[in-house]
Each structure stands twice: as C-alpha cells, then as structure tokens.
Length: 289
Image 1 (cartoon, helix red, strand yellow):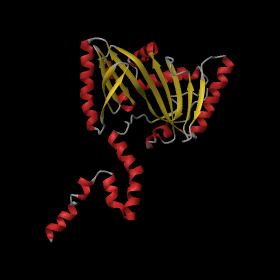
Image 2 (cartoon, rainbow, N blue to C red):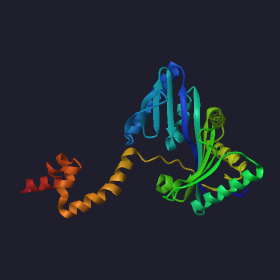
Image 3 (cartoon, rainbow, N blue to C red):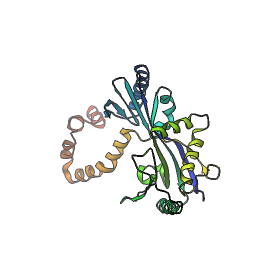
Image 4 (cartoon, rainbow, N blue to C red):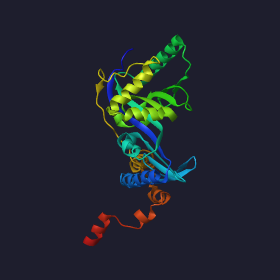
C-alpha cells in the first residue's frame, strides 16, 4: 500500500467516555471532575448544565460530567482528552467509548486526497467482497468526509478535512483519520492504550490495522515526517471574542460611522458601561481643566 506523504502533527486519544457503578468510585470520579471544572473555568470556559440518558451534571470546555443515582459518567474530548484521559481512567469502572485520531499536514490538496482514498476503499471492498458501508460527503464550505461503517456500530471510521472542520491555523492543510470505538471494542482499545507502549505508537498502529484491511494508504510512523503536538481547543471566551471581532465589529463600525453610535450602544445593552461613565482619557482631561 502507498504511504501517506506529509507531516504527522497529532496522534492521540480524541474522545473518551468513562463510567462508574458504585458510590465510592462515583464520588472519586466526580470529585476529580469538579476540581478540573475550576481549571476549565480559569481557562475562560463557561459552565453549563448538562445531561444524557438520565445522567445530570455539568459541562465546561471539553469536559462533561454527571451522575445517575450511584452511577457516574465523564466525557473528555479533543486536546483535553489527549492530556487527561489516563488520570480519569484510573478512577473509572468502565470505558464505554474511546476515539483515537491521527492528523497529517499533507503534501497535496486535502480534498483531492480524500477523494482518492474514497476510491481506494471502494475498489478494495469490491475486489475483496467486503460488506461495510462506504459514504463520501462533500460540504458547500469545502469540507469533505469519507465514512466507513455506520454510526450505530461499535467501530466507525472517518477521514475528513480538518482544516475546514476546525478553522484553526494549526490545522492548515491537514487531514484527520479517526476511529470511534464503542462497547466491547472501546474496552479493547483502552486496554491497548494501557499496555505500556507509547500512546501515539498504539494509535498509529490501530489506525493502520483498520485502514490497510480496507485498502487505504498507510500511516507510516517511520517514513512520515513527524511533528507530534497536542493543541487545545480555544476556550469559550476566545471563540466568543473571535465571533465579536469577525461578525459584530464590522456592523458596529459601519452604523457608528453613519451617526448611530448611541443607538448601537443602546442596542448592545452597553449604556451603563459606555454612555454614563466617562473614559479614562475624559477623566484626565476634566481633572486638568
């Protein structure tokens, strides 16, 4: 099989769901989650009420946690999962979902590469009379995703344009390979991750094992140029400020320049902050005069 050409930037656990079944382990898991909640708030994330399947709790950034009677649940995602999954796993009774991912900055156009891989998967499936589902989705924003399997199954694969999906500079020109494991497959995956080998090597080997039996290009950890890192998702406050800067600021400037500054401030509910309180420069000027 041909090898993927580019720079490998990430290879780690991307999502994990951990549960507890007894009061003691539930208390320990949720105490850990509560401590981490404070750290997430300090990074600029906002705490929200959260719930699923009868569990009730909170979410903050890339951390979700809750309880249901004597049971507990914690979900970690993205860079936070990559860095903290082991700490939470040691307190849990079971792992019900575990996603792993590899991200590569390609030496070629990402969309064209994904289309080629999709064709490879289709040809291999036909030649070897395999039965798994293959689906290619192209979005109007330039994104493209190739799916193998179905979402409700215990193993679900996707290859997609990470640059378009994340819109973050660190993912410029990047494609991402992900496998979502659930049920018994999640248990097996987390056992592999804890057998003593480097996590990145286990993740790369797991994805290669899946890809090569379905006709895809090889993620060669020895051949591919590596620059492994673990970036965090921007905090809630960072995303909000970016939205204000890119989406709100242009309209505010336009209408202010047309003579509607006071109306704009009132519409934004900032009267008490801007209209009724003089600026620092105005205070200095008044004191001098």
